[in-house]
Image (cartoon, one colour):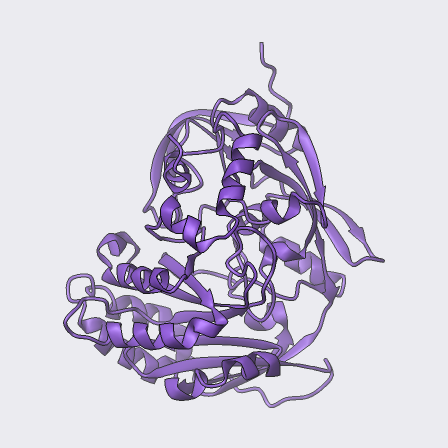
Length: 441
């Protein structure tokens, strides 16, 4: 008879609900694990299972099977290597805890995602990224993973398996412990200001090289973007901080009001965007801090539904112009809530990375009305345009493309599928959504 380990809890039957309540699945067994041995045991004994953290994915990848594993209590910091500037942690740790621990050591991860509430394992598995650097998974030096049969495997930087594993949606195995390479921390002088589209889109390659941090919050239907730049400075350097008007803190509340009925009256989005741009994205701001302090959102004020597409840097200008022209046509209903987050990623070699073999621009698309996202026409329009130009979807966000499209978008797609079948021949880690994505029966 199976014996449960001391710190592992099990709950029979229930309903798994995503953070914005858009995805719900019944389950038969829910395990909460706290040790690697417990994680191994659950994986070994389960016929089918998925792992989840803080449930913030817009893609249906975290549940949908009879057995689920909550990884959030498997979250310890295991060790520091002061010589190599490396930290080893358990996969359920949140980015908030991880980054604050790193900063206390005087270190940083050079390219941080926009939010800090997700678990590290989930962030890595879905290719989470920031801007002006590589995707987060590229800073990993080694993984310990639990394979489908419950055995452990260690993979280090340089191993052939590493390029497949870095971004793998949890279908090659379950991340257990993770070692990340850091750099000495630094201070950024951040400036924010609106710019016309004709200005911020010009000479992007030069701007990417010029600034240590570059991000653009594009405002559809306004002909403007809100440009955020950062330059490394000495920590003791004094700057005159400009925080903008005090009412800026109400942007999310006002957005919620203005967008409340745009699923019924899509055209009003254009009006709402102009109001929001004038009120909340029209002032110049200036401040300094570490990359984490100065650029990462520490909380989410409301639930969202998200899509994100990436395109080669060389193709961005033509895709942007086509997208802008299409959504500005009043003959369709593709009015887009602001902002569309534009970020920049350096090329890498990870098989399912958005930046595989190419410098990349990422463009986020948000619906502020999470519960009516299925009728949000913008998601369809954005996907059609990006797919046409070879764009790649974010694995943790909303998209409709499946195996035939992925084979065209990712040169290593079939290699990844073959490796997945080898490591998980019984499809233990595939829910219905992932079966469709990988064209598995």
